[in-house]
Image 1 (cartoon, rainbow, N blue to C red):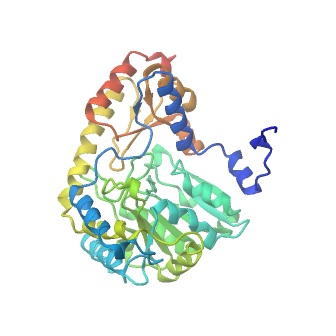
Image 2 (tube, protein in one colour):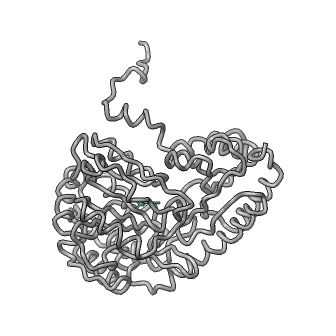
Image 3 (cartoon, helix red, strand yellow):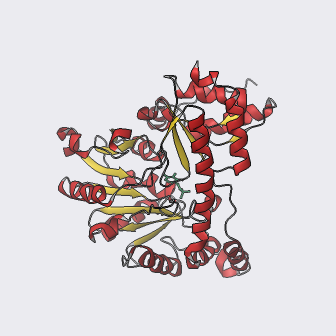
Length: 401
Ligand SMILES: *Cc1c(COP(=O)(O)O)cnc(C)c1O
């Protein structure tokens, strides 16, 4: 029997539309990495936002204990365990001085990506717009496209300190917009947002009846002198806000898939209603361990930050020595580096991988304004980062020529 050619399978229009955007950059890079390894190249992976540090031991211990209790293996509670949500409310108060009602103002997510991706399905109709920073984490744009919505890009430029210029948004687009995304500390530029900007964004969102979706995946990963703000602490309202938090980076729990969203009760309820159609909540063993994570003293994440900060300093000064223009990121686990000569970021990325084994993310994969940049992640030990810089120094032709 002839094998059926998979390329002939009829796919949905929404998947076709996604395909027209290009592949999801991180799955493409994972494939490139595999190819390089198969062909004998020794790869130093600075491409993904996947922490290499282990989660703190106390959290793993709590996971093991929770796994021994048969009760924790039953069907999870959809919206998340109240014990975890109360622990989140306590943590949120200690960290931001904001009170949350655990019952109604917090929803547990299977990683913040899950919540972010289901969000447009709950709040957008076809032809509605979402205002999405460019460059940014790809899930915002792609989930808007999946639900049939339209994306209006907000260019993030160095001369504006990587903040969107809200006053320049086309009025017609604005009147049809439903969602505004923000993400500081920012992936990929590492920028933080000053409180005044956050206040301005909140006023802007309120005036234009937008839901402000604030992605705080890196809220706890900041470096000397910097601290992130929750939108909820900025002027005390939760009115049109959904703020997404994650355990992935704060506690190096990426593989566990655990995050949460806080904010307006009505919005939380609607997101929960939508999401209940797709999943059945998070394994209670993981939620129990997360309660332990939130009870750890701030020094624990402080130490994680210092590790990234030391790597950052090595990478930034090394890249500068090689002639790259690089800002010192205030937070996140990335360094956003401008390619010295005007060359395509994909080309430089692939050539770098082939000739040096150093794997990065091409800026263009994170939005068209990311063209001309490479994103280096800080998820490898200092020796590996030094080795990557050493290898790059022998191949300056890749970006210079
Ligand atoms: C890593 C990341 C996420 C996803 O985090 P999970 O909780 O693991 O799903 C969301 N937003 C940004 C900007 C990220 O870098």
